[in-house]
Image (cartoon, rainbow, N blue to C red; front, side, top):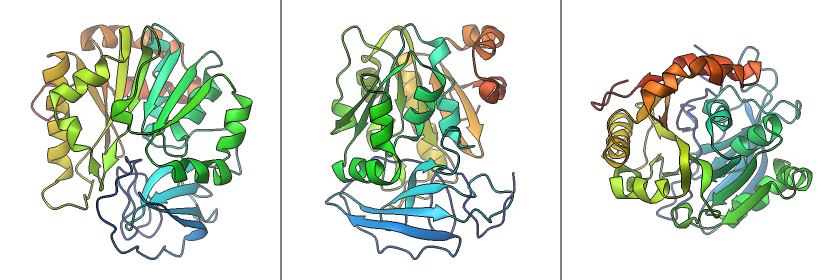
Length: 309
């Protein structure tokens, strides 16, 4: 898809002069000078925490033809990386036209209706999961308590917690220290970035084995791996190379033939599964999804282990 340059575009990372999209793991490394918001964004809130410069901004509903027109964005850090997307004018439709929607396809494959979200942000993934799957329970981990506070005030997270009491549990703390529920989660969503790049620990097979231990037998993970359009704050963190290194670490942890990938507007998502079996089950998987999500199933491809789909 092609959109006007000055209007937000859903991609793996957002710098305010070149809009990209991904939630990232809050980090207190360094604080870049914040960039001014483009004319298409209206600032709603501006908060500073020990971990982040947190801004909430609304995209003009007059950005005709763009999937983020009318959206509310959670922006973190000086460059303004997008961590979450919501559409407050259509609260009963949690879809975002981004990789968050791919995450919402996972529950029909799980051995039990429970998911961990590592990198919760303002809850874009959790909102879709709770909307489409009335039996699912979600545990989310977010490092920065101020992000959760802002999400409750400006992204209706408090209402989401109230409406789904007992099904949504939010943990404030390091996602890499998350503990599983007894018996393991049916699945895990991993969306962990720092300084505009996939978390360095995710390029290590041992980290994936640690996260994999949270998953019940037969469970699966979906992972935001970033991609070539990611522009890290640190030099030497090329987005395409980091994405490939992350996938190699996953293959090293889970084995050849156990990782599938798809790309949504240059944002790469990986899934752990016996790929051959997953592709054979695609029709049954699609049949168990809401109609709005079925088209994503045909986009999965086996990862060949060489950095390509």
